[in-house]
Length: 175
Ligand SMILES: [Zn+2]
Ligand SMILES: [Zn+2]
Ligand SMILES: [Zn+2]
Ligand SMILES: [Zn+2]
Ligand SMILES: [Zn+2]
Image (cartoon, rainbow, N blue to C red):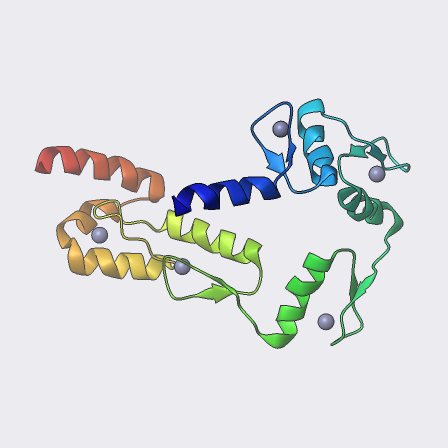
């Protein structure tokens, strides 16, 4: 019974349903903003170029790329930034804060894009034998030498592409 009333309570909070999909919203405004996804309406034109935007916040951020306006100054150095998120990314270079940590190793990063690049490094340095990833090619090599010493002889002959082809060949014969 309690689950039933809980359910009703949460539903009562969201009273603005979307007529195009199942979503409901707490305010008429958010329902209206959401509707633009269905209609493709973009009521906020840039005014400088011919782009238009569905939300005012996006339009304001975009216009700054034309005006060069940087309303977010860093309090730790003389630099200023166009958006709040670029400012907070920048501030971390002063504070040394690294809130973006790799799920694959114990490294962490100040900016999400650096973490993304780091994941690519992992992807490039995946052991094709056991799927373990390394953020450093040297470590992958060490791993292969110690865990799969037989595979290394064939694999180290060429570049990465050659390596992979050889790997497929050896796997089939060894199985
Ligand atoms: Zn909808
Ligand atoms: Zn523009
Ligand atoms: Zn700064
Ligand atoms: Zn990592
Ligand atoms: Zn391995």
